[in-house]
Length: 180
Image (cartoon, rainbow, N blue to C red):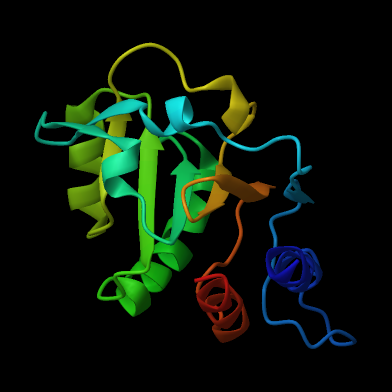
């Protein structure tokens, strides 16, 4: 129940554009949408056994990267909304990188060299992985980019966000920390 209440708080804050009449400091891109995931749309252990490669070619499993709260962002260097979202993700990463209970994972299906050059050119230090074998598991529901999945304690998919979102606001970080 705690996860659903916090999910509702995230939905309220993230889905409200910053306007003069609204105090939420989080702004969504025009085409962004956010949805809580149904209880029957949970990830299985097989979904966490999904293989990825880091930008140096080392094979890892999503399960190796999972913390109590894991944010998995599906993105691409050619996607304007993905690129718009990266500064906020970098800000979130900078504020939470030493927190062992939270992990941010960027996933791309592009060539590792392309991704590595892009990240270096823009000064991003976020951990990035590329799809190494097969497709993205269907249970992640990735149909558009960017798509963020927030996983809690390796067994539930709490939130799916589609579109660029400013993840580094104090309210969103506090809500994410409460999911730990």
